[in-house]
Length: 108
Image (cartoon, rainbow, N blue to C red):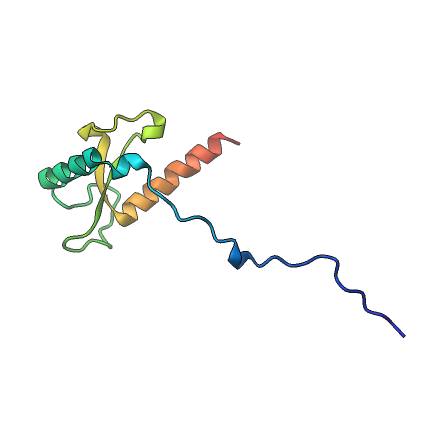
């Protein structure tokens, strides 16, 4: 008669280990930053200024992100209008992913 051994390793239910929700840097929630962004939108309009944007996600009243061209963690000026571009969500995500990949590549 053959006996079956019980596995010595247990499985881990990874669904229980959900990542913590992403939180914005407190700077971006400050009244000063929000007022700065509101002034930019009033001045420039609620448009995506990214020259590479194809406009697929644009709609009236769309959410725009004030995105630092030179990110704060890279020494960018926080309230310099020339360092901020208004971007639609798609363009903002694309630019952020590219910057993150560049930063990660520098660490390896």
